[in-house]
Amino acid sequence: MKTVDAMLVLLKPEVLGLLSAEKHAMYRVILELIWTTGARISEMLALTSAFFLDDGYDFGVILRTLKQGAGRPSKRSLQRWPKRQIPIVDPLLEDRVLTYLWSGHFRQHERLSPITRQTVDRPIHRLVAHVGGAPFAISSHTFRHSFAINLLLYGRPLKYVSQLLGRRSIERRRSTPTY
Image (cartoon, rainbow, N blue to C red):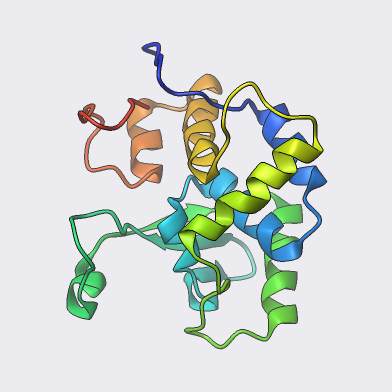
């Protein structure tokens, strides 16, 4: 694995410490899903209850890869964009997600959270301050980077991690750190 100087990540115990301190159900579910799936914040906020799959054996979420080009996508192009199914194997997270879905009485195509991208980072900053601070700025994207790095540290192949993140290739792009 190449060293990435510009990317600061959290290790699993640090992420779990932050998540356990979050008491607000909506924020906890959002942060846990970002950490567990590696989703972009835009992909997470676009989720509806229809994107969760539960066949009695496996539980997972389907993420639409929403970073395909500049500008706001049309409804037609949204249907053509690639989707990826991410398994959720943690039974406690599965229970929290299902409880959140059932208690919220969400319609099939109603977003799970009415918040915006910018609003997600506020509770993260509050949470970091509550647990004693951090040596670097932590945002929702830090959870995505931490997801990728932790998978690599646990021996997952780079190609697999790249696919989970919804990347077209494992090649480094100019503005994005390498996973």
